[in-house]
Image (cartoon, rainbow, N blue to C red):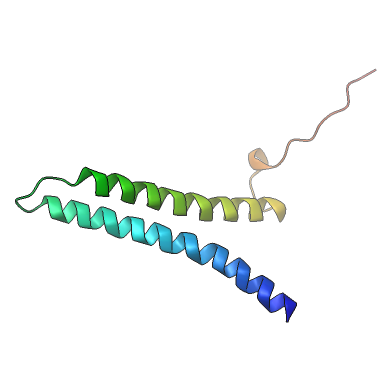
Length: 88
């Protein structure tokens, strides 16, 4: 039972940023289509949507990057640096 709850929390940690980035994308889309009409561009909505979209995508991308880094799936330049002992 404990493992099911842990996995549910992990899924929710990925679903919530996904919803945030989706909502940000929808705000940006509405701002662009609203500017096609006779009104001016709603810059506040566009910037808010971009920020929400960026936060959601950055969280999911960071989650995937650190998971892959832990499982050693990344390129050598992204692997943690090994500290070398100085020569005596």
